Image (cartoon, rainbow over the protein chains, first blue to last red):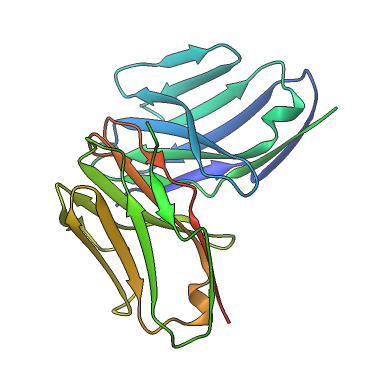
Length: 109
Length: 115
């Protein structure tokens, strides 16, 4: 089955800086890669996703890049704000979704 | 759209008791997923249904766990008998298709504590 590795497990940045979270996957047949944000005590919420026929996708301050050859994908958050502080999960899916272990992002004012 | 609705939000019970978690998916969604979240193991898929039929239950930890979906708007996850190591947050999610190409929408979860 699919195995998704996520790094780093914790990330601390200053407000206004950029944050990058990286994931690798094992199943070359995986074709869908979502990113979820989970605030403390809340449910995971989808923030952006990318499919295997696309190399990059942007939504305002958030972007995701996908390298199918290397089997890795990354989340980029620019101009970080304190409200970006949360746990971020990447996922890889062929027929079912496997999540990475999560990255705790802290944005310091 | 009310989103995915789970109940109860919190459950505290003693080991050995039966626990039933409930989920109502988003209307029109034909896939339903049950996840368990712990600090040690992260978000784990337990089982998922398509059109009320269980498709993959390989993530169900052991026979003490069972899940049903009697109709398109209701699913249960049952633990009998419960053990302290079952303490976790259990999420239900639904989607229009498999995770291969459709986003999954999560409920608010049930925080389960087994004493």
